[in-house]
Image (cartoon, rainbow, N blue to C red; front, side):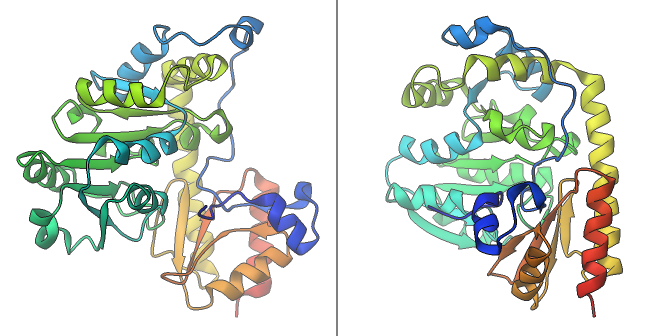
Length: 327
């Protein structure tokens, strides 16, 4: 199993610091949530029903005619490779490692590509996977470029899979509105933008036939009733979404400025995280961890990803730690 951010209990054991005493910046999940609705007891007592309000509310939110709720976009990442026979798959890297692992696990031939290498490789591929904005670099791909790649793949029965888990703060760049086109699959996550990773809710936006096949593969009740009610309420509340978006964008810019002030100017990022490439990454990770601050360490390239502090005390704690370890 691949390592991810958020492994706070493991860090607590390793460094002898109680979980409650950590500032966890290791994920790209929003550190605060909108006001949550009350969940009636009946949602816990009954099996989920697929014809509730969630699909219609989600279609309005994403601007997509056809979609499927799933237990976090991770469920789709693992299942999609099972819907194709052996394929030649390109993954634009660096990126969230679960994509490559899922395709390899099902026996597909994998190529890791740079963005510049995609045009040369495209004719050899059956599937291309892109994360937009990229995780961890924050790179935002041009929609016209992605649609051009999709057209080339779709003409040969191929797929373009676009993981938009971090797109909610920049919805104008989403391909959600195009997801009815054959061979275009868009993945969205509710947990990251709304700060509800534990709810396990995401969506697959694609043509109806593919969604039906995926739904059959995943089986009934893949998303729990309480999560469906929670998602319906949050996706319908435009005012709360706008407040969340504005706060995240402001905090993302604040984080970029803070890191730059301490010799860690980000190479990339988005509203939910900043990415710093630095040969000192492992040492910096260790120094921060010894101070009870957990960030995400990457080996290739040597880099750190910083999530957002949840409150002013967290911001001050991070600034103090950076000041202590900066040259």
